[in-house]
Length: 116
Image (cartoon, rainbow, N blue to C red; front, side, top):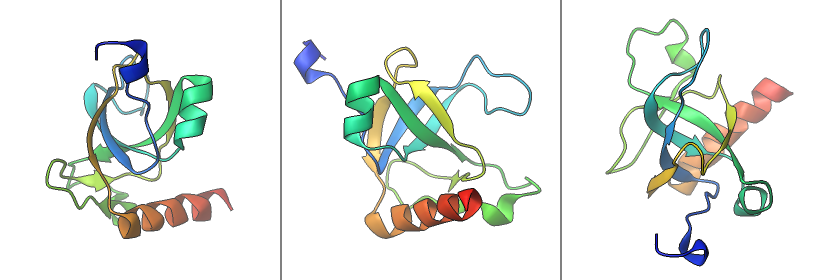
C-alpha cells in the first residue's frame, strides 16, 4: 500500500490471512486464513480485529462444530470455538476474499449461541 489512506482496514465477512504467532498452549499457530467478525469501525478506531481461524483439519474431535468456507480463494472450515483479537497491522493482515452473507450469518449465530 502506498499511503496511510490506502491501508487495508478489516471489515466483517472479510477472509484474511494473518500471523497467529506467537501462540501458546492450544492456540492456533503460524500464518493462516481467518474470518473477520468485527466491523470496519471497530478496526479503524482500535487498530484491532476480532477473528475466528480457518482450519483444514479432518481429525479434530470438535469438527462437528466447524462451518465450511465457501470461497474460490480460501478453503477449509471456520472454527467458531476459538476467536481472537489481534493488532491487524502488527500481524500483517491481508484480505483474501469475502465470505458470502448467508455463511457469515451462520458463523455469527454459532458464536452468539456460544456466548449466550
